Image (cartoon, rainbow, N blue to C red; front, side, top):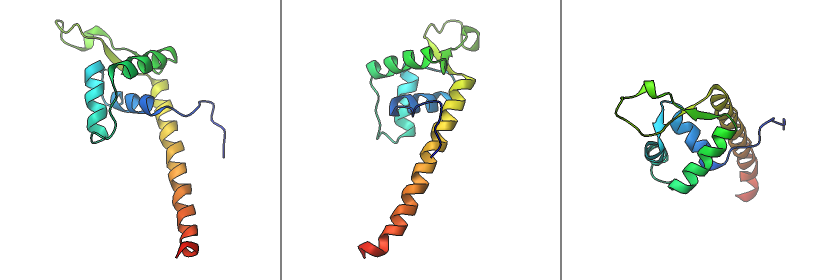
Length: 115
């Protein structure tokens, strides 16, 4: 197995980056998008959301979206995934795909012994 420079993302960070991959969102919008993407199987509360957003911003994976990108009277804080954030998300998805592939191979190899 190859060693990646970045450690695996937490579930919360993964879902936040995935929510922001399509468009800039405010906090409640991120919470709603995560619930939608996971078919309500993964819920994130405000504390977890904002703790993770701060970490992602410190790592330069997420930034504040420019105000010019939204209505002038909308004073909510919007977040945007960065190029580095997209790269981290892509890397994490590839890592997860390799785990799923390995698991499927092992399950297939193990099934005759369990029959």
